[in-house]
Picture (cartoon, helix red, strand yellow):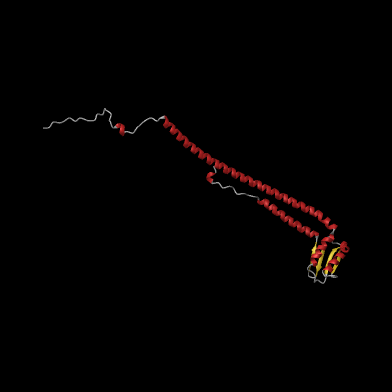
Length: 226
């Protein structure tokens, strides 16, 4: 008969194990170097994030400044062009006013000059007409007779130009008539036509002022407008 053997534990739990120092992870308090390294890394990360934010903000500020500059430039250019058009319109009106005052005096000084120019132009293509009628102011008949006869002789139309004086016709005006047509030279009609041309031109200046001037805005993404 076998006797029971009392079990004895080889491991003593009240003694430290020889393997605990190897198997357990090392645990130690952070050193000053560790703290400084962590502090440096955190500072670097914060600086980088702040620098990126500052750069983005600066880009937005520059973009906004460019947009404001473009808008201001457009307004300035529009104002300058409007002023230039206004000055142009004033200059045209002044020139017309001066012309309207000077032209009658110039015509009154030598009214036959304008009439001779009209007659000469008509005779350049009226060589075959049997008769040509020239109506002028009655006060100019004597002053024009020799000149008209000379122009008729030059064109081979001697004796075919009939000069008539009209008491109601003003100096510088004339009417040239032939079988198939005629030409009327009237200072009043010329002045009226000039005034229409000037009025149309000024209307185009006013239309440009109404349309204004716009400049495109510098492009900027919606995400940048903050």
